Length: 396
Image (cartoon, rainbow, N blue to C red):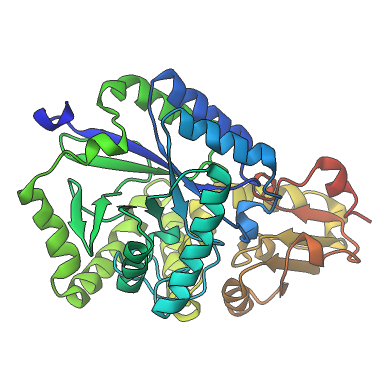
């Protein structure tokens, strides 16, 4: 049993499982976990309305697949309700300043969680006991509602071993990618919708090397250390304002330094750091998804896309349209006079208008662009999963 060893124990959890997810990545991960007898936690969205996760019908085939995973020993956790961020509240964990639940009245949270639980239990034919919060953001009202609705476990929190708080058992979640550790219980959070084949190769290599130390979630609950619980107590139950402020300052300084080291010349690193600071200030003002902060200098594909379009002489007079434009950095580097950016998040569109005003921005996605005369269409299609023939139909 892992409770008798000082070696680290690893648990995998898969977030954002919906009918519209990147199925190729999901199935590849499933094959890896089957090969090494690893049983991850599956974060299933009961009624997904988030376009970024891919909108698709919840079919009988999908529910049958989820039931088969549970029969193989996977734990199904309720991953929010509709995966729509409705508040700018970081909640208990304080990792992100947006949430589907944190900050909402207790009654509203209770009803949403109840509806999601009823959907899952209806189709899975089994009681749901685990909860996985979108964006790791929830508050004490969320915990109260979970307890009232007979949930028992939360997969979240920063600690080195499971602990109990707010009447629930917490399995800590600390990692975004596999990293070897000396001891403690470590949950690795996976978002397969956005992974490259190379990233999944790294996951497979880790599973092969550490398969003996990959444990299931239920087994991990037997591992406890009062000393390690104090890490959680200090992080979340001591006075938090000072700690959070210092943490934000630290991240603001160290993160640009780490990323800029990957960017080549000193001048490029300097430009990237300056742009990062500019984006960060916009993030604090407009409260958009934090991953948009990364500047073009730290994302090589931005320059590649812009150079590809600019190399075509027709682009000087053509119309360029980007779905999922974010802050508009790609469009800002394209020389066409007719540039249109669409994103489903109003906050990021408002920021783009301020930061890169040379383009036209609107809230929307594929369903709002029909009627435009398009010469170049930019989109990250593994998110939207639009068939090639349908993509062609958008061109003039």
